Length: 245
Image (cartoon, rainbow, N blue to C red; front, side, top):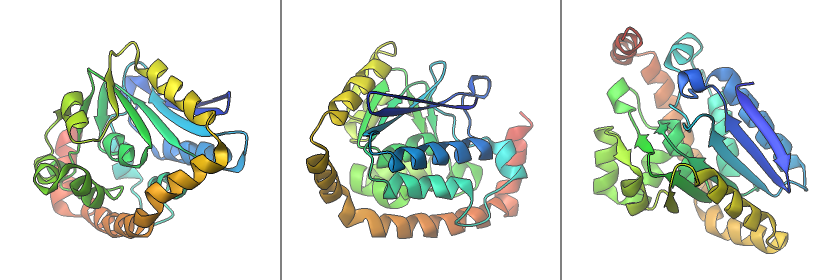
């Protein structure tokens, strides 16, 4: 299975499991991730959702070949369903990140409550490089987190950046050795799962709710442009050249 889900001790662990393609996400993987998140949201015994990737890689982002063949067409497309689930869900989100964290592999972390990254993680937001635009509300959230100058650099140039830089801008909570990152994230998830649930819910809502409507509106705005850019000659030429490498 390309999305593995296990539930134990109140934690729903969702693992991207497509190692031969660096866990690049397909339409089916988006669908399965959303389904797992919705199941977790509906089960009061599940207190935390933990994301990780198989074989030392978080995710290389969208599988571009799959994306070109079956592009998102609107708000009900699986990728946009996932983005809304990240914003609207009540269950705390924790991520264990290592290796490649590209595109949505980085932007989804903006919506996680706790993020632990291995020292070998390489983050990247290569949307402009591919003739596209940012997604997941990153054009709104990243400037607020990192400052406009740094957000401009990371989004407009699309250059890779290290775990140390991700920590410096506040994208992640801690840098860990690669062998320890999953256990570190699991320990934090267990601590969250054992917190008083009502107090945790209300505190999380206070931390997030003020931005939720604006974030969802920006995701919708970005999504419309993203779909348009996928169909533009500029992005088609760039992506076709990338796929021929």
